Length: 472
Image (cartoon, rainbow, N blue to C red):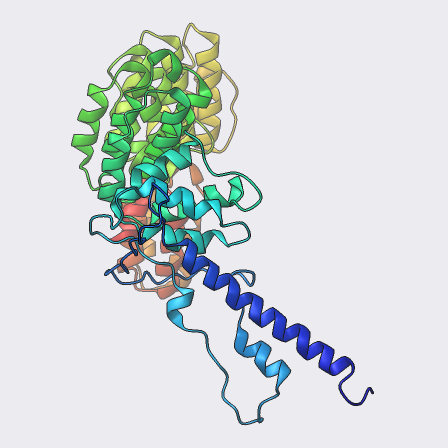
């Protein structure tokens, strides 16, 4: 072990320099965050007011590169007593700053942001966002311009890199109230296709009732021919899907909005509804059926997609609209309607699907057979008569045996009740028909085991009606 001031002194010196450099970095940030006047004259620089709004509590852990705990460095240089308390960084340093609602405190926000970025090489994006939001709502147009990449932005050895700039500007943008961001998006005025795609993406993430109207208003600026291109329509669909999660608009008003959209935008709208994780998204798309052959085919194709949660989302009204599409003169619509009913595992549509096996279009016949296989859990081939015979046996079982089993399930003999319930739930092709019976048993059966198994069977059924009863 070395004695005297050799390696230990050198280590202390290095750590002391690290602490000094950390303090210098925050001093530089404070100086940069106060923008100079546009004329760059020697006149005094107006200081940025500290925002009056409270800080937003963030649950995101702070990156080690963003903050240096100087107390830890000092402890390494001069070890404290074992009983010394741990130094905790100020919460004000660790929390992101919320954009103030007051008018901007500088005359030229763009100049202020450019000067901030011009000397920000090496500074973390969150610190740049903290300094940017202090400028107030007047900075929003500049943030949009930066996010869109329009205009000249500081470049060079001392300037923030493009990646850091984009992260900082988007971070600052997200801290303003949704209403202010929506106003800035609509006031942008651009008609360029690629810029509109970015604006629509930002509108979808507004997070309140302004999201969906803003998305649709911006999307109306796109040319119909552009909306037929996947890379243009995709941001619209994703924005609609996200906006449905935050809107409180009624289903009726949303259907009316869809009716007012042009054909191409309406197609993007219903695809977004079908893709949305909002519970009413797929049902909303189905309720828009009946406007035109092209739109109907688009809606049903979207609902038939394996990723669409049609089974758990399509209630009776939506399923009625899909069943009505089986009577369409367009074979594409009939084929897609069969696929949706199969995706929804709609046992109530078995008879209609059997009728579609007689369709003159071979593709409709094939789609009906696939749907029947999905709903019944078995494949009886493409012969309609075989399916009709099976339907007769099924109907007889529902009429005679099902009531007997229900009575046993409600009896006091728990062993007999459980055996009867297991026979009921083994008929997977009729679970959706027996939803009311299962709900009754889950509430009224004398045996707890029967109640629990009936509740589990409702969950396994997974239809919109079953989930609705479970929620109640």
